[in-house]
Structure formats: C-alpha cells, structure tokens
Length: 66
Image (cartoon, rainbow, N blue to C red; front, side):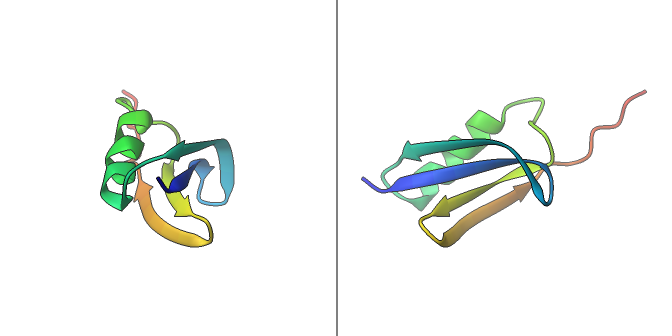
C-alpha cells in the first residue's frame, strides 16, 4: 500500500503538522485528508504528497468571525 504524507498548512508556506498514512490509492488519500482536516477545518489547508509527487492541494476557505 502506498504511503502518503499530509502537510497541514498554517499559511501557504508554513507547515503546522505532518502525518504519514498508508492508503490504497490517491482517491482514498484525498478522502482521508478531508476527514483529518475536519470541520471546522485546520489552518489554511493541506497538501498530500506521495514521495516527490504532489497528489492534491486543498485550500480552506477563510474563517469569518462575527
């Protein structure tokens, strides 16, 4: 099973957390990333990497505080 690295981003250039998880394929990894990202979402978004290949980049919508 391929290993994927999840970089959770505080901003576009700053990682705040990194997780490595095995998934069957890219689609399963993307679904897993959205589950980990949660509601409300974590930080600015996340990237999913498999070795040196960027699989997916998700940007969270900015949070508006009232």
